[in-house]
Length: 242
Length: 242
Image 1 (cartoon, rainbow over the protein chains, first blue to last red):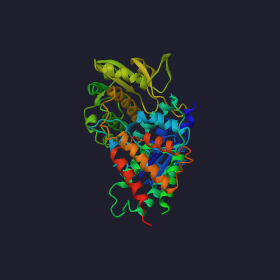
Image 2 (image 1 turned 135 degrees about the vertical axis):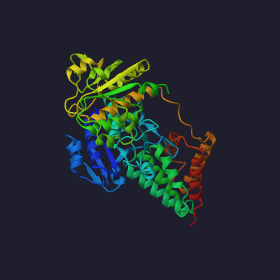
Image 3 (image 1 turned 45 degrees about the vertical axis):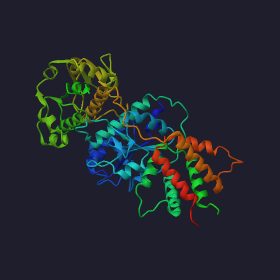
Image 4 (image 1 turned 90 degrees about the vertical axis):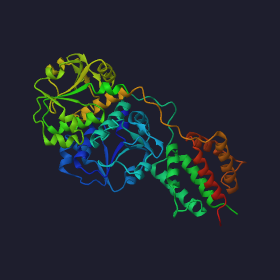
């Protein structure tokens, strides 16, 4: 199964997890579905014996986990990332279901690193965290009680990834060569500088311009070469001769 | 949704569960997916404060749980039952996957009571228990580590039931206010002028720049307001003060 390689390239990122038991449950859930790469952003307690106990045989996943300070570090080097959210809409961006998103996530994982990002037990991901990811993804749940346990949510997503990897539907056309997270961040910073210098963007009165642009370019799945073109345009306009 | 009625008629049967925490986790998992009917066959400890804590808001499911002495009692009145097993074959009966089985389980639940039966944390269901059920069902898992947590297994099965009950998919969400063809054309012409004036684009040596940009912005399905923002940026950069 080729999909096994893809699964092994998918990062599960847990942001600011409060309870080490949930980290252990996530590790076990990952391993049952053939995933191994766990990233922990500023966990409250890790390593922790409670995490080891709940991992129940998946301690290798815990031992190789990467503990980082920020979501940006966890996303460094990825070409696609999914923010797992219970909301049905994220700032007017349509949210795809886990089942809809899984085949695409697996397909891109054959080309580069892919991440699934989970927020805290109490409040999930912040708006800023969601906006740093390529797309929001949700688990269809009972609208009257949609509060999944964190370990259970990781289990469901990893299951959908495994199901997609086991029966890969070959993409219609060759997959594009997507820009990495940091290449896209570099473009956003460059554009912000140019907009500020030109007077179009006023940091003292930002309205929602930067978020709007993130939303636009997040939706498009920028390719490497496209980021280069866009930065070239912005750079040329910045230097425009009189 | 008609499927909601079906989900409410599906029993989750936990046989001889050792840890009350898993009973609580199962109750929470059920409720997140719209199930409510929990049957406990000879649990080691129930009721139990650990179960209440792990149920986390699904205590109504625990409070209405039926505690019985034997699997036969739990299956009384059902028209179909699935034995959840990690084995790939059960006494030469082919085992169906959760995804294959879910639509049939939901369809029958519109006609009568249906049960899903889960065994103990350590050893699952006995052969005798499997044989008392209508069919064996398994969760596709990593062959090298197929040991799902009981609560996680209940979560996955209830999720598959909900997905089957929700299908066909509910109507799409409200469509965004997309830019018209001519608004997008206006943007492309504007961008071309600005790129030419800045020297970034040379009409005498166009390469494929314009096509690349059309491809990029064609893919994104630009909204009206986004075209206005993009034209605002280009205009401001064109006029950039020295």
